[in-house]
Length: 600
Image 1 (cartoon, one colour):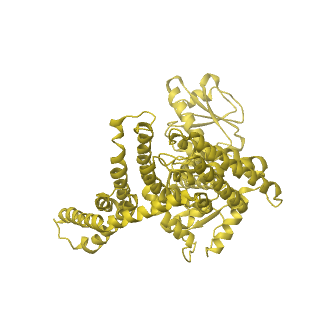
Image 2: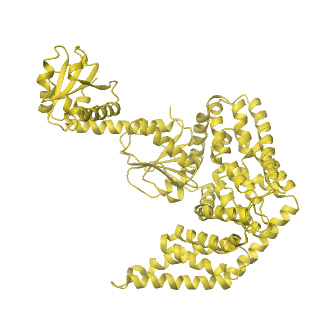
């Protein structure tokens, strides 16, 4: 039974983009400018936490000189560069960075918001300019056009940024900062979790965390030395409590998979792992919200905060980014959120008599209902072996967390199945590009966007990257493709050649296979046996070949002996019951591959 859903581009009809998809796309655009630069933000955070004077663990005035240039110049320029590249590759990136410089100059606040405006705008301007004029350039003037058009547009945008966008963004940033300060002073910040937790479950966690809270948090760190905003989305407590409740009170696969999910979520920081548990039982969003509120209230009450973004939201990242003197406050907020989430989730799970306990079945039911509500028609109930898959891509929102783990799991399954010719990679959904013979695996909430990016690909939706039966279906489909290809290869061999070589062999008798080597070809025979066993495995034959010497050969009716034409006469003198196949070369002779398909 198909437990998740599959959407094939050619047959899935999408009537219109849902509001949720549009919000996801916008949020991804924001977070897409931040995510590639998380390493730079962490580097800045570590420098601040370690060497700030005063307040760092190892105060050093000389090294601390890095803090302000990184905050005010490096990070905004990187964001502007990435924003421009998202719109128009390298030319857009360069123009976006130049345009960002205009809003940085003269600003007394970190210009993240300005970079997130000017970077994509610069890329868009360059793209439109090229669309209008690039095909009108005479031969020999291409380089002049490319360099000067980008330079002039960048200069104009930098000036516009300096005199128009900069004052607007500075004013907006000051208003936003004052608004955040007022919310914090009015003790209303915990209420933000009413929106944050549901948004996370709808796969807007990166949009909320990296697209909104991180830029505001960095600005707050520049003023106060740490920010509680970094903890709002990254707090692992709400998800941890839910998963712990499933460990004790869940049923079926939801209970058995929960302990592994706890490790991945709490230590690995991949929060997406607990979203399917809430989607399976939507009432659990209430414990998540209340736990988030409780945790944030505790953070605020005790003065918690981080020096920089904790990305991913793992307890390890949080501890590394915790400034001196804030460990108890940060850990207390996480602990409170975990306890609240666990108690409320346990009550819900214990009282719920309708919980079937089959996580993937529930996910499939919800996926089907959601697909119907979106006007999606799915005419395919399973993967077909008729499609020749050359590449598999796992896509998630950020392209570096849950999708990487899913890709690793499938790679391991393919390796165990002996399939090594199909590469498995992971990317962000926004980076998907049409490719021939492509299979894309996404979590169901992101399938719409993935289908838009690669309409011709086969799309497989899973409820949970870490635990899906669809992986076995994919492996089985690829194995069938391999077998079909091998069968086609065999059918192309001359019939008289096959019948002549194997005409005396009774394959129904064969239960044991041995490669017989002489003293001079022991090494090549060893490799031949290994290769032959791999082929047997791919062909799903329940036989295994071994290697033996002429002196130790076993003579029985169920024995098939394989040797070279040079040794066959010697071998015949040692046996009378075993069947013999002789080939010119044990390593290269194609008849050995043909032999496999005659075996039962």
